[in-house]
Length: 369
Image: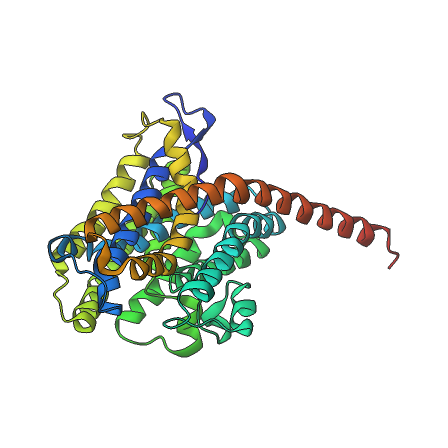
């Protein structure tokens, strides 16, 4: 859910600016996996009146793992962003990147509930106002759209990166990753509890850490420390993903194969290994960039609005036609949100925040002690 502009190394080790189209398409595929997980598998478990897709469901019930892939990508691109900015620049870039699309998606989702689904979904004024912060569950209110929980995980990751920037330790990020992975190991033995668990997120640490390590390997090369940390992150990723699958098996009464889950995690790491080793460097399709840019709005919009659309159509429309129409509709809506709002408003917001900071800096300089 982040912009993917990095500097790739050419054969002579010189740097040039280039969009990472591989990650663009990965982000879009991860988003589609989550979309189909919700539409094909999860919707019918939450609303009995919605159609089931028994055959497709056996495949797309693993689509939730797109979130794990998102977190690996986030670790990569956020470390990129943090490495090139001070702590203020990092904050501005994250606010300008995340909030414009989020605010509009939140408004559209809220309007959808109020206009078409008040009999099955509720939104209170205070809930809406608190959701505008993006914190939702973190500040004691229910997320208006369930997918917002991943944004709250991302915000915690940003918090730790911000702390590293404030301490001016970004060049020693491996030390932080090592400590974070130790906490993940402790989580296996249930040693992490309460507020510490909420802040440290030991079950998600391996994915963010892996992405950050892949970025370090891409830009600085592979050394023994990075290799060991990446291998530990890999093993922990498989462990926590399989545990998550066992929880879903108990929750839904359907088997989530640990072998399929482990295989998909291995695939994620394999693809990233290909990327950082330059094996995918010939992927330069500009339209991948468009798909990557649409990913965040698509993720924000699809679940609740999609459920409302499915419920509105009911049994009057063939279920496969419903799936096609709603999916395409959400993709188009995501494109329109990005094209006509997110890009322009994000730039405007970033410019305004930078201007405010410049004015603030001038006042601090001109004010006598």
